[in-house]
Length: 297
Image 1 (spheres, rainbow, N blue to C red):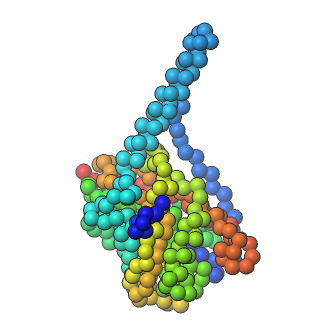
Image 2: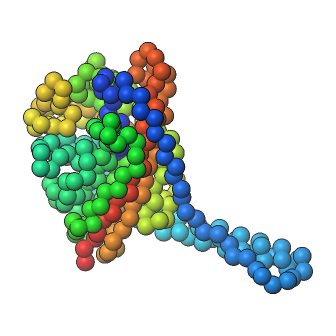
Image 3: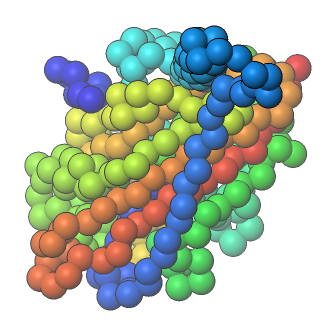
């Protein structure tokens, strides 16, 4: 998961106010696969058994080929891409998303996906941040989300850093579970809650990415700057320059072919007793996201 230089969402941002929520949600995640064909004709037991074995082998080979096709769309975890490691790209993602003004017309992408994916993006790598239902938990608790970004064309040759389920801890956050008392505690908190991630899955155009848990990335401490209306600045109106650490699952997608694409991913944070202080832990925080995108010619 994590290499020697720590080049190892969405993200639950549970504040003290939301800790008291007793919302319980259930999400069923169904992954599609390929099956073997049957035979209507009569045959001897040996022939029938051979047919079953051949069919099963074909199904396995087909499933493996599909999974390989999906994994070819993902930059391998331990190589540099466009001069940066995975960890460096994750730091760049958090510096980008925290710098976005959370205004009334285009909310920060961590709030919802009404902001065009092209807004504020440039260069060879664009970022995708998972909108967190914790920002509006009373209205849509842990429900599956579909973000239709297909009207905003991604230029050909552009890669996408997909932040799936991850955590972020900073002394610049308002007081709460994700706020360390010292800068040194940022990585400890980020690591603790990344350890709570379960049942992670990612599919690209209905084909699952294999070994998705190999894409866990833990950053070292980094510096970031925020505007007055940054996404985590209230309550308290805390903003400015601070330090942070992140941990979780990030996939750097190679440029996808021209046309429409569907990326489906999700999982859950399963909290333990003591994660948020005395008392029972809150219900699992579930992510089930379908992202629709269009890549230009």
